[in-house]
Length: 182
Image (tube, rainbow, N blue to C red; front, side, top):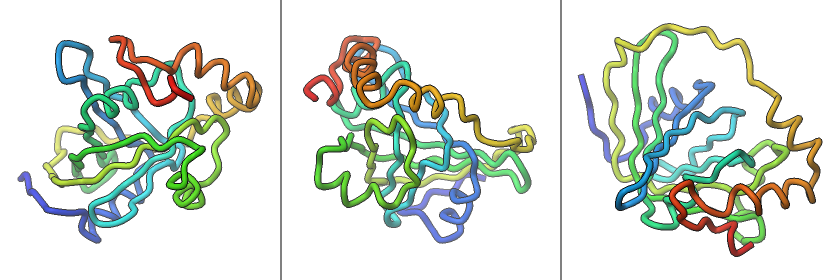
């Protein structure tokens, strides 16, 4: 059933590359809310067998970034919604990369541009684990939603910056995010 790997194998990389959705989980060190977010938009990239990144677009909160700044812990999960069944988790430590940094400029060309991109989450993976996924239902992807991208385009750069300063500078538990100092 469950298997543990030291890094992302070629087979697991091919599996990740075919997924339309992934999930990101983080949590504060002490009392607070665990965050679990679904992500899509072809925003995930494998940088090496032990390093991954995703382009994060502006949303209603910024829990992942706040938790990473506090403690760095992050888990990614991919589920096969088509045959064969599989659940894949990537455990590691991450950091938020902002657009004004050298690392952003080095990594951003790996992604398709997304309106509202506010940051990149980059993680070093220290544990890769699969499990059976036999209880996960079968689903057929219909397509990606474009609502968030249209919203970001309509807001424009100034509107997005104002929104981020209002909604994305701290977590729901009051932890600051890297955007707080931007």
